[in-house]
Length: 259
Image (cartoon, rainbow, N blue to C red):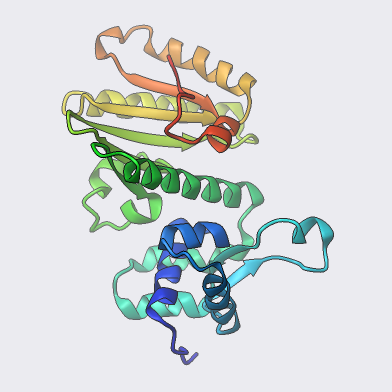
C-alpha cells in the first residue's frame, strides 16, 4: 500500500488514536485543542477515504446514527506509524485487531479519554495545579520511563498531580460489569500487593477503582477490608467510585470513597 499524503494535524489524529485506541470527533477536537469543528470533520473524512482511520457508524441505522461516530486507526494509519520508528512492533500489531474489540472495551477507552481531557481542563483552569497522565499505550513501550512502574500492574490510566506543595501519583482501573467475581478478587489482590510493594518508596501513591454498580462497589469494599485487615501499618490508599459518577461529574470531582 502506497501511503497518501496527509497534513501534520492529520498525523496528530493518528497518533491520538494509537494512544487512546477509540475516540469520537469531539474528543479528537478537544485533544487537538482545535476550534474549528468543520475542519476536524474534513480531516477525518479524508483520513477515512485514505484508510488511515476507520469508524463505527451506520447512517442507515436509526439507533446508531443518533450516536457519535467512533474512530479507530486503520491499515494505512498503522503503516504510517511503522514508518516513524516511534512505536514498538508488539503494540502496533494490536491495532490490527481494533475492528473486533468488544463494546465494553471501546466504552472503557472512550471514558479513559474523557478522564484525560478532564485532567487537561483542570490543569488549565488552575494556576497551581498540574497533571501528567500516561495511558497503557504509553507505558507498554519497554523504553518508556513509566514501564518499570506500571508494566506489571497494567492499570487503565496513570496520572500524577502536582499542586505546588506535593506530588501525588494515581493508578486507576475501571472494572467491567461482566467481569467474574473471581477475577475481581484477583485484580483487587494485585492492586493491594502492588501498593504494598511500592509503599516504602512511594508514600503518595493512590489506587482509584471504579465499578459499574453499587453492588459491585460494596463487594469490593468488603473484599479489600479483608485484604487490608492485617496490614494497617501500611496505610495503603485506595479509593472507590461508580463509573456513572465519573461520566457525570468527572474524575477530579468529589466522587471517591476511601476504604
